[in-house]
Image (cartoon, rainbow, N blue to C red; front, side, top):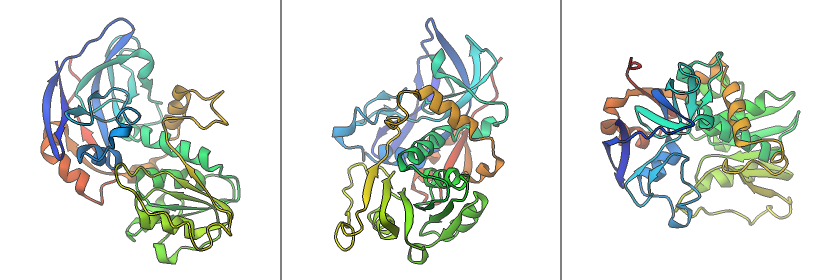
Length: 321
């Protein structure tokens, strides 16, 4: 048996015993760390997943349903304790649980250059990589990212490493300026950002943020909508100069590899590349706190409600003998 965090109703969580069923072709993993992805997990915790998306928004190893109870999460790092690659540090798209079993191919080795403590960002980096592909950012582009949460900041980080790009993170929290600088990006408050960008990436999950992204886009530019609004229906300002500027809004979602890469890029290859991209110590700035697993049920709601939470790390006990 293992201990796992379950969301039992809107705003309610508890620890529950969960059976581990390790059959042929599976590995058992002792969890070292897991990451709380605040945006999505807050929607699940608050009951904000629309019924129409209950199937499409399932996490790979989710148990239960969004109508509750549900075991949800997708950023676990641990040691393989039994099975192929025993002793290896792996990443899996698994909920918050102290021990678990997954198919061997679902336990992706963490590169030696990436500390396990930072590898919890892999799912977020995978999403950011998909966004950059959907945005079709090119060398020399002016890129504006509205919303400097974890995914937005990682998208800006990736874009800033393309030759000649000019990347600006835009956020209502001016304390994010230091974060932007650490990731190689400029920073601006919404009313101070320069316009005429080639690509605007929206990741704030707010109507005001989307309006800002549209307003900053240059002639025939692309706006990539990377937010997920759940049951909320945002206002989209399609009046004014939107049509005259021939703007294009593109939806990005990590559940599908973009068509231009789908023939060559499997989900596994994409996740492996996301892990490779986490070798930079500068990315530690995106981990905003840490909680021991045994205290997670008591702290989970406060972590999700705190607007300053980026990626919150959950720390598990030592590996069992």
